[in-house]
Length: 454
Image (cartoon, rainbow, N blue to C red; front, side, top):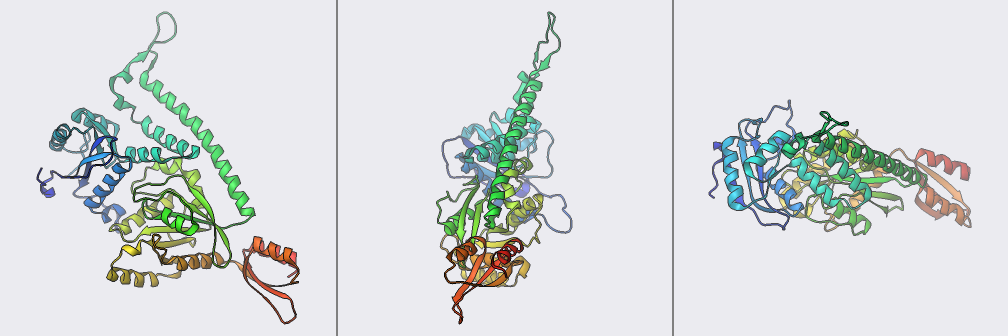
């Protein structure tokens, strides 16, 4: 069909490329003409264009192999309580669903249970909102037992409020005990009780996971290796950067939420310091609160990290909005924008033209020390030397430098230093002793002094 002007408040659709065979889907991006005021500064939603949000929604749908047959914008003057969008648009999409034989309509917005039920009746197709779509992706990406539990917990919390859409069979009552029976329990009450019981069991298991993770973190502190956590918007290149820095083979693809379960690897920095690099789940705009809560055990790797690398796709047109979305989730975890552990990694500089690259290089160099930014290309490896140097510098803050004099034959003592401190230099002095300069955090520095009598 011919695209129409969006300012007339109608649906504008353009054909989208086919994906896999999960189902034929239409993507609808509702867009309010006048977004609600958000104070003196613009929120992340205002920084995005409707077209960019639609493109992201299509990417989310293709991440679960949906065959996206049409995708388009619907501009709204107001949100309708019954169907979210107006009756005319509902009828128009119903015609598209029938003509295109689509079985799924994705509404890239939060849809209430009543709105979902009404739209499914009007279109004769399954309706999924943004939260449901993200939950579906997480369900397919989870590979570990922990990931599966976290996703199931979030999905049950979401499903519990949507039992109303299962229609009339939920209104039937089960008979009570005794000869005559009684009003008994409605099916919807039984279903909710079953969900509550399953959620309680999952929370018990997740509590065990949380305790296990804490034991692992405590054991790493005793080694100890600093933790460097990668965070960022989904598809910003975290896994590619992780692979480049660790020579690992974690799945990395040009796909939203290509990886979900956290991965940890040991990395040796240029001056010999070893760190644990942690690749975490990607963030996204309007990330469901229930997912943040469910993945808190995993995200505690970020909370406990010594360094947090905020990986940004600096080549993306919505890079600033994506940065604000990540900052919002980090804020929910208690990590503020001025946290000294944060280092911004401006990734995918290989995609920039010369003019944009020069401008961003100048901008990065003007960043204050507490908000350092490093420009890299995880794909080519460019800028990784500057990144590892920035990590070492930040880890060195607050650490103490000690000068030691060892017997050259004291191999065990030198080995102990390499295990418990960062050895900056070692050389023979004029007296034939081994002069060693080390750096360590205050606790380890005290152990060094006690062992070597400094």
